[in-house]
Image (cartoon, rainbow, N blue to C red):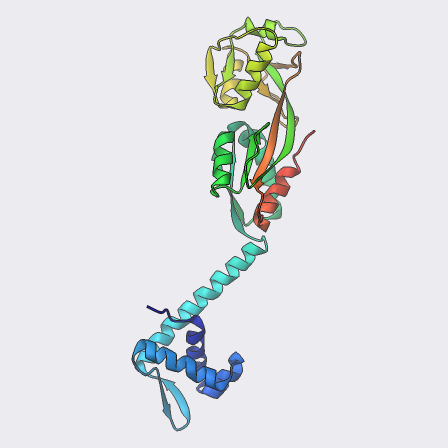
Length: 294
């Protein structure tokens, strides 16, 4: 069944407001025959007269009044919808879906969100806690706009993945432990360990670091939440290997950090669709890009 056009409803409302086909044609910048055609099409669609003509004045019929009342609401709703969409196209508002690991969410993302809230307060960022592989899959499937992922990653068709940050991985140790100035795989492998679970890129990095010294230690516990790991370190439960961003607050006084020998780095990338990026998404990317590090 053919739908009623908003243009036809707009014509009907204009005639009701101005009381004349000719005045409605002038107000809508339409030819008079076009105005007559719009009304004829509406009446054919409704199956009843919508307007009456008496002494040169045009008035709505009772059925016409009912349709005009509804038409005003429809036209107002359409105008609001267009206004909202225009604001989104202009980047003044919008929703951006972002995927990231707990580590990035805890210490990096809040800084970008604070900048975004100040500069673009009507952009809503919806955050999902995901692994890098989950993030890339959802970006490729169109259910995310932005992702923070561990590097390196294989190329994914349709996605752009840019190197974003390189942060040092350090040893987090109970302050009560006597420890050297730099931590080696041999020294740390002999201590109780709290490590990231093996679904993470950081777990693979630390396993490779231990393997470089010929060690394959078994951790006391594996977690995928860095703040919980730090709390366990502070309680003296074990040592951990975690990335340390320079903007991150100093750890609990019961925790000391030591650099590694050999050094180890956690690299992150900024991923998004390689196709058209709307302005709201670009503003989120810009806020994150401002946090890039060597």
